[in-house]
Length: 215
Image (tube, rainbow, N blue to C red; front, side, top):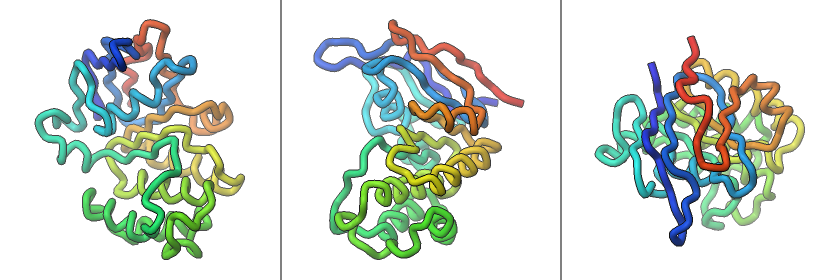
């Protein structure tokens, strides 16, 4: 049974189509979106996360439509952007509390993950005082808390140290047993280590590899 579905998904900026007619039907597993620079990989993840509204098409998670029941859908999605920007005065612990409340996730999961990622010493530090790699780890913890039904990761291994990269692989493999883990990455070692199925965004915006259900 598919967890994440997208039908006829399309997005344009300034009248220029980024992609059109994207179809997805994914069950639990690890997947990677591949495509040339500018093909719309990050845009696709933002649409699926409910960060950006599509111009056309629909998105469903566990049968709930993003357009009709956005709160229910977003509570089932974890998202790690390809960015380390956030309010500089907010602490990692405050961020995780917000995620825990929105997703009805136990906060102790965040503390366990931050221990494995080497974050324990930084949980009460202001975000603006953290390094890029540490900020990325904070978002990584937030994306996996729950765990949510769908985990969307945009270049998740960027700026991570070697031990954190190893832990990231373990987190993806474990989560993919019950959740859809969909990522955009140029990290071929990460793709190989997680045995992620490749979905190609073609020049015309068509996402190949749909109905990639796993037993």
